[in-house]
Length: 475
Image 1 (spheres, one colour):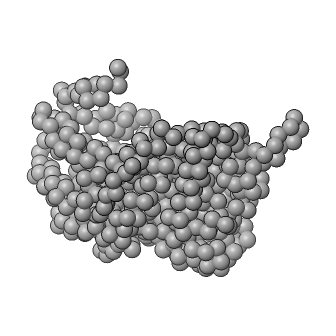
Image 2: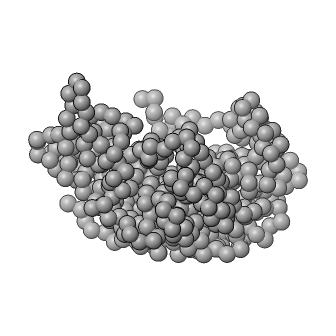
Image 3: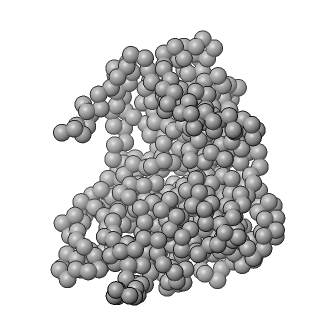
């Protein structure tokens, strides 16, 4: 049985698998790695892996087996649904919890299940990840809520869209927090606006759930969140599980986009009688292990305290922003004047003047062992907006990309914190930036690195690494 540990914001870095794993630098030295790419995927928590390991001997099929292990696995899997509802304070009597692969699949699933028509309207925003934009485009008419110059949502424009399209609006779907600027949207205000007009709201919580407590509130509350999605791989349980929560009535009607085992009550050659939610929308053998991992990660997040997580990450972000703002050759994006835990998660994008974003990311990786991300972060329209590109400039960028020519393609460098990151890591990063800035103007890095025009990535000249030495994946 498990020894009960006490997890806190002070000690959680000790329980992150791979945290500080030594990696090679371009100079041949080995160094402890630093991961500032948590907005893409977080590492896995050791207690999550241990919990899964404890469950492995009991793993079996669910809902259709009579053996003891099947019965136990069914109880565990069903309880994981209930645990997710509890985490978001969802009324399990009125809402269903559906497990998917990730947030992208969850949003796609809902886009099929709402029975949208071509003249229906879905309001999303310019700041969305593509996963909360593209699924709607081939189902109905999509309108994008504008953002102001620093990237915050324009609620006046949202109000005008609601007034303009009226009853044609079938959904307002909005990110809880941007994966580019870290801005937290005023979900309560948006929910009230939506419900006042009789419109349901979907919150893409992929970026928000690991950092802030989210309360869906009772179904009759004016700030109730009708639908919510999240991904386990951004919540320290990257084992292929996503979540979609919404009213049971939505999923009782209609036909699921995926059909198969477990989705039905009875089938003849002529008739289909569908199962009740969530079974109806969880076709095939489910990812029980992923559900177990997500359950445990939610337990740990709550034990640490979402408020403690937000305060810790805010301290890191304040220090990072304040330090970078002092450099005239660094361009910061987003609203960096007020950094408050209720307004911002630990995400910051920047550029260094006269250095390609991909080159900066490569330098940080190859010379300092720091993992960041660069590019447009699956949010191209938002990046175009923040960079203030003209329509002509956007067309030029698109033409280059379609020609697989990534020379001078725009983008940014993104730093994104997890709850386990430490101030000493931020200071090490800032020291690296100082050293990079010292070389500006002499083409030092441009001579040292080569651009792969087809991928847009930079690599050091005359340097190769044999990944097989670190993980023998050919064996």
